[in-house]
Length: 462
Image (cartoon, rainbow, N blue to C red):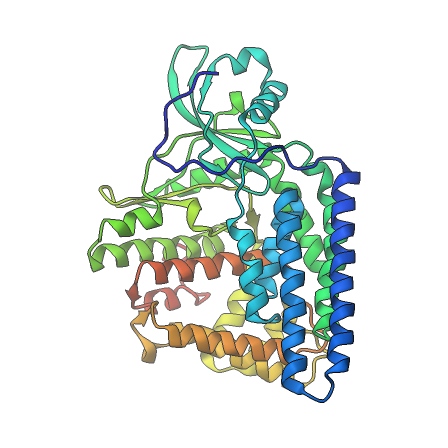
């Protein structure tokens, strides 16, 4: 295929071969990983037993063992890609406040793992999915724009049968990814349980992995993503300054998604223009407003707030949103219960907040009072950003982030039997990403207009 020209993006590192596809080859690697983790843990326990008299030495050895385990996970999951790598990324985020920071530092490398698959493999997938006739209509760049755990993206020009030439991007899924979800996640669940056992936690993580399985099954169905994107695009027309790509169904299958190519600056590129404070604050307001619309108004949330999924067009004051594979629907009863949790906390109504938390499975009714108190302390700290006395909120203020982090750690330590809330897993990932973007934009905002939108009596388009 002809090369379209060198894009302005940096070329990503190329791998020698595609990730292993067969259930046997992937399972054997994950089984080997689990065995390696168990061996390291056993060796660590023996070493700590020998050093029983020195508490500091025991703690140091415990951290060393977990760091070695984390390194093994990063190496293995980075090679496998697919469901296992995606789940490993989420696992590192969900256990951020359970595991030592040294371990999280290693696991965070999974977020940056992006070795790409050779173009010949990508072209072979496209030929199988589109057929020779449609493939002949495309001129595809051999250099990918992006690569992730499930697939990679290439820019192309498309000469449609009507003669119109369009600038498109092709999202191409690696072979065998959808077929390995169940086997990968079953083994990763065992690994997660091993990590929690090390921390003496008895959480039942099965609901989390059920939610993760459902999301990954949707993410590997590009026709489902196309439908979610089209629905989202129709809603986005209501929002000034929001741009969403167009889907080209003629070039889309379950494993190939064709979209309009969208120009824009990355977040780093936008900040590199040294925008004025008013412009940075306006963009941060747009991103936060979008989150409120997605969840409270639409019930349709693009839950992956990776910075790479946003582009910025400062000349027209627009934000471009990319990648809708992780789009989730939240029905009205769930959204109203979540709203009840927030409003009760903001009013200081702890019994009301606790009742809502039970409905949302945020905490188990079997938790002792210490767990309930830790939950309230966490909620009250996090929602302080919507209290009048703290306005305007400086997203760069590390004191708030540190305090919220300490409250979250205290909450995890206090829990005895409450698993991570599965339904909130991806929603809170998006919310954390929105706050991180506000910090990256160096935003300083009065959030009281957003606090007013939490009230049930407010119009949905407030």
